Length: 271
Image: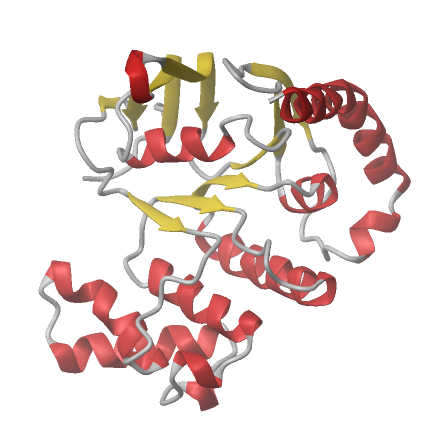
């Protein structure tokens, strides 16, 4: 199915998600979520710890069914898993007994791609993410940044129309995060997938995205801000942070985010 430029890639309409707890209790993670991501748009989602950022990604992936509201993908109601999306998690999901090449190629198995062709494509993607000489390496032989590159290639080889990314660079050191951010932008610039990118790092969110969506503290978190990032592309994630406009955007977003971070901290202490 081809993407329609007239329909949002992802649309969350009045979404609420409530989890059942022991003893008949419930916990409402998010409520009244209205969010659209256009085809080719890079949207970052920030908010305090526990505000439901990952919950929204899981709803867009079809891993969670909303308690209220609905999710549409390119104008069609989402029912079941979102086959048009790729999901990159924070934690490594590589199989330790497979080489980098096989970890990437395995993503094509559901499409019944012949093994020889899958390996050829895997080698091509590993070259694109800078791992041409590591195709035969196992995950334990790779650095954290290299493993994340394998995971990125594993997601992209399927050619998803939507990229769902849950703090994918969180475990990495600051320098490696910037390198991975630049790599992601270079790959994204080639065909402009729709991206929902969850991060706790406001600077990373601004450096990468077209829009930054701010969520309130949980429980029953909702969207409290939606900020356009008008910084020119292409960008270098390190150099763009020196731009005065970057600092103005950061100041505006932080003003709406700061109180929510303090609320989340206070709620954690009370709990």
